Image 1 (cartoon, rainbow, N blue to C red):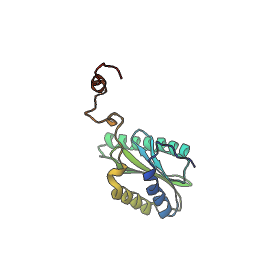
Image 2: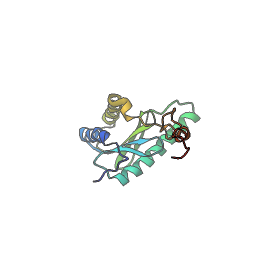
Image 3: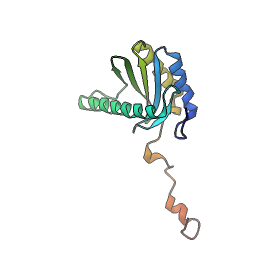
Image 4: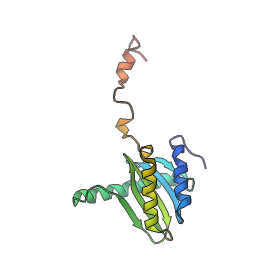
Length: 153
């Protein structure tokens, strides 16, 4: 399987470890708030990781809406039980969520604990800046261009 540069390969092994350590776990994807894949386990192809990220961010958004509508507070986790599998989604860090697909044989409590433990262990390494935060606040592209003397790049 080929990984793209957009994937944070230094995080892939953490997701692989989660998949390998909890029986019944199929796939794990770390995603940004806007549904982009940050990293994914080797058990899932990039295209499927992207689809899972889109679904997971939608689930998080729906849960946030319920929390806002009924004064439920922030979302801790979303769990969807299907006939043949489970979808687990938790907040991982600022701007980032962890989504896991597991078989029906998985112990849901064990999975939830394992996901939260992973997030607590790696903390800030999992965070992603908002798109508007990509450049440092002090960077001014126009000022940098003017500083070379002739106003041309």
